[in-house]
Length: 404
Ligand code: FEO
Image 1 (cartoon, helix red, strand yellow):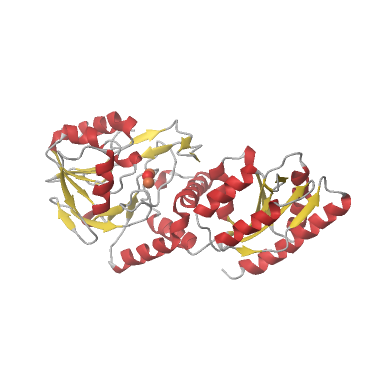
Image 2 (cartoon, rainbow, N blue to C red; image 1 turned 135 degrees about the vertical axis):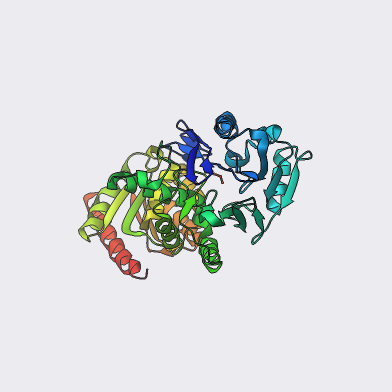
């Protein structure tokens, strides 16, 4: 990716990572980008860096516009290594520059780098920096999604540089949302926004609502949002803000996702009549087999759906390991506003369904009880029970969905 001007004298100078397919356990079938921004003003200012292995690309992009030693200010919005990982390479080229960062950002950076030679200015919400024609306003966003996080608003450009928020793991030569011209490609882009939110930001819905409200109270005019991953929102900045508000308020599709695993196909067989029952109630149903699906995709499908049925065989009196792993991961994301139930096959003692409900209770989710257990392989009588279980669950989901 070459440097691309997104506003007058403001350039995206980041890198495209076409090859990454595993982003700390999060599957990225479309790769990602590491966006950072260079402002050519009286004081040349760089906002964020890139993942360490991509330093050469951003340095080349900066050098295509200006000698890097002329950078006076380096803003670090977020210290996670995919954004601050090249700070040492940048500071080696412009050692006199001042780093603007939150207090917690500085503490984190100290743990990753030898920062003793660098100049810092600690900033907090409301602090501004005039760099010539442009004025930068800093907005702390703690726990969105790390304690250090902040955003930088470029007042005269009506531009919000939002670090991870509003980002997408989407490698593309397009730099702007309005370059996604077909409905299909825009739908794919929006799906990437949901995927990102579900896997990174799901725990922070209340904070997101509060932060968007705070930004609105500040009366900031925003006509462009430039995140640190994926495309820049030039035409749909309000739309992506509303998408975030909707997700923070628990928006989901009237749909049930069955997330299951199976040992000898008995639990898998149960999914067929359960799905028939759900669909006969007019509710869409998506099926995810855990060992055939990356965890982050299962999380996204959970988040998109109003309700979820977990299917697990019993192994040694507890859940099947892949199901237990999924529920542990889901619990950490603190899901809300979803209805859940469980089913599964067992050989003798049982235990998986009971354990799944214990996990649901820990998460504080709305629960559909009782769950359904079948001994060994489902008989035709059991299949009728599965069908009825699916129908009853779907009826409950339709009622529950009306609350939102
Ligand atoms: Fe893209 Fe929180 O790092």
